[in-house]
Amino acid sequence: MEERDKGGVDISVVVPLFNEAENIPELYRRLTSVLVGLKRGYEVIFINDGSTDNTQRVLEDIFRGDERVRVIELRTNFGKAPALSAGFDNVRGNIVLTIDGDLQDCPEDIPRFIEKIDEGFDIVSAWRVDRKEPFLTRRLPSCIANWCIARLSGLDLHDFGNAYKAYRAEVVKGIKLYGEHHRFIPALAKNFGVSVTEIKVKNEPRRHGQSKYGLGRIPKVFFDMLTLKFLLTYSTRPLHILGPIGSFFGVIGVFLGLRLAYLKIFYGEQLGTKVSLSVCVLCIFLAVQIITSGLLAELLVRIYYESQGKEIYTIRRILEHST
Image 1 (cartoon, one colour):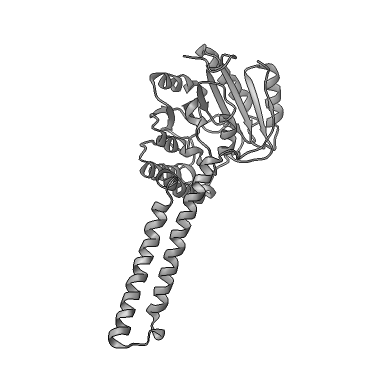
Image 2 (tube, helix red, strand yellow; image 1 turned 135 degrees about the horizontal axis):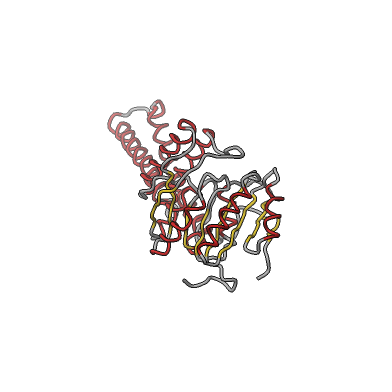
């Protein structure tokens, strides 16, 4: 396989972290053991997403002892999607692998991801078959969300929420992440015609620290799914969704207007006392407003796609060894 840069980096592992100081040393040890065994150039990029514990200090200790480690410290806690985006923007490898820092995903499964990428797939997604988490608060909501996302996106995956994935670098380089859209990367990338596969992986119970997810994220996931549907279907043509809605109100307004005109002309009725007159005016007004909004949205979409330069995170500093 061609090497991506003069440093000989072939595999980039991106690890977003938020208050995982206790898990980092073992995670680093296991990652290093697996990656060295692959006998391919690699780098590990740790993203400190505004941790308030000793995460940064632990990362700096690891950085000083390993030239293949890079550390990106964000100024505050932006969330997993911006943290991953910061990693994607700085990778140097041909293959990008993402894994959480809580040690629930096993680094020993990495060779299977690489094997699938080498077979020709663009994205390899992990499927946690036997999840070691509470059923009502984690597994059940996740199952429902995964089913909904699969139906909305047309992509038959079982575990969208797991960050444990491998990508060809050119895939993630072309995707901008907002909100909590990290779980939708395969669905968003599907628009680019990429090939996606899934492998079953081990899942271990959390040993240290606390989970950053709970039932409170359900509303966010719901609205993110609505956003996903819009992005996949109407992101480049918003008038296609707003146009029919505006036309619906317009048809109702015109129908009521013709009916009122008929009553006035043939029966001489006083239109000022008709409730339908107010409804007619309201519907026509709504139609004009909605269709105009659609036209403005079309203009904003074009501006957006022509000016994508603003990032969704700010970096405090990057620790990296000179090559």
